[in-house]
Length: 299
Image (cartoon, rainbow, N blue to C red; front, side, top):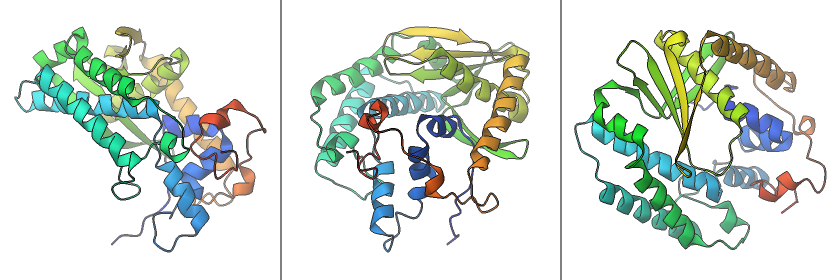
């Protein structure tokens, strides 16, 4: 079996975590490393288990994204997605995962584990399952999703994890959907399921997607369109991903990667010392929702 190596690979979420909380970043990418091993130190194993926790908002997004992905792949394979079946699948999966977390079923790291259960927080689950069902049903009245179902042969990618080089860095992306527009261009689609998303965050993420499409797929950035579709509110918005945005994304990745490397004690081996990743100030509200707050002794 190949030995796993902890590599520094840039992603939008990794860079975002770095600026959200340095200690949470260290736990996510360094302090949890090796926690799956049977002989891992208890502190490392606890951090790894906390890393694997999901929050309710993230869970809703992941489940709805997964259903949308499966439906589109069914269409690509010549099947006709059925709303009632998709809704039933979503509800069945949601209830199974809730039970799985409540009863601690399945292997740690593989099974669903909610941070809310881990920290003994009360959650009203029925409205959440109803919201998941509502968003899945909403796909079948969403004009963009319905359009995708009529042109499955044009869909180029659905939730494919890709790795590509930018300068001397490696970058991960996973586009929700990439579809040819039939006129020599392409549309990048990004599903959103939550309440609030900052336009600048969405624009930055879509710019990286545009960089991938231009650099790795050879698509003309001037022929790219990016859209984020909010399935909770039934809204959509376009974002430019032309040459200027692609160049900006590339420059930001180079700058961000230099920042991530600057705090390493050994860049070649990707080693980071915990002491260089400080805690947030005591009482910072970000700690209230952090999955690592027990390791920080704030939970």
